[in-house]
Length: 139
Image 1 (cartoon, rainbow, N blue to C red):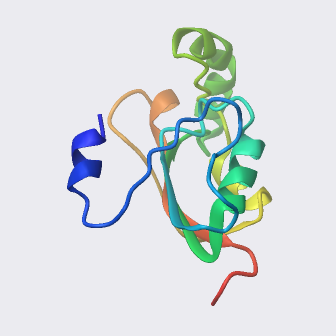
Image 2: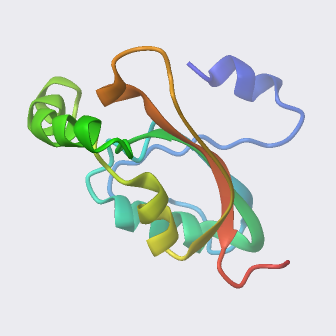
């Protein structure tokens, strides 16, 4: 879906397919990593975030748009109940991952974060949109 935009980009863009849990890019070699509606489906999200950190330059940025666990306890409870079925119906997608916590625990400092519900059922639409850099990165 992104091929046309990638080819029109004024800067180099490399699409990385996540097959074996590793990103085939040298350590500390990229300026930015972008994930969009990705961390919900990767089986080992902690490993994915370690790989993102590994390939980012020290001053690099990680940009993300992800859906996940709602702060509304009623919605979160329903997300937890629905999640096993969601995994089966949507290719392993998790609706209840606490994205902000996962990104922070991986050693990223979140610089900007916008949280909101997109249009649609609340169990699917709570969003985490922002960017982060590695803890200890350049100020």
